[in-house]
Length: 205
Image 1 (spheres, rainbow, N blue to C red):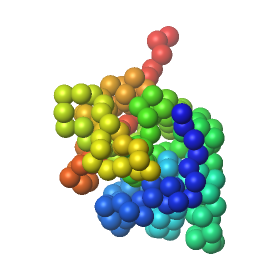
Image 2: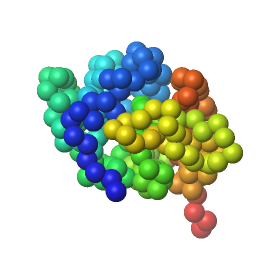
Image 3: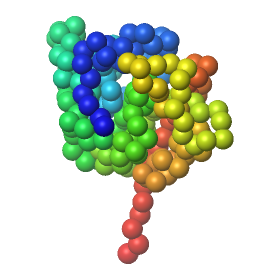
């Protein structure tokens, strides 16, 4: 059962012990955003990516979400004066924003910690929030085995395994929720960043 994280666990999961340099992720995300964009980070943690990315893009509207009250409080405390709006997710699949309001959504080191069923629900909600034809970029722990989804014990968080996904599993989840994979980039030995586009559906008549 999903529960909000306490501060010590949230600090761990937010990437303080992550093996991907922040600068590399900020550079990658910056290639997707433009001036006057509205964009969202899912699982922002301490804001260590949200704030520097926001400072590089003029006139952008940035919402950073997390499901930990403690983590959001910490993010606001260590990023004084930021224009990033830190908002709480009451559930991991319910984003605190209106439909068709975002032009880019991304996450970093977040999805491996979300159970597959909840992640599928989050994808559906991201489809609602993202504008038609716009992009997302998310990192997955790579499941290099015949299973579509497996629990990985390479890393443990508070005694819990992370979730790894094969390319086939990611494709199925994205297509069911109205997205198409348009790019895959290796970020570490065990992780890959997937780029998605929201498919525009034209109703007949």
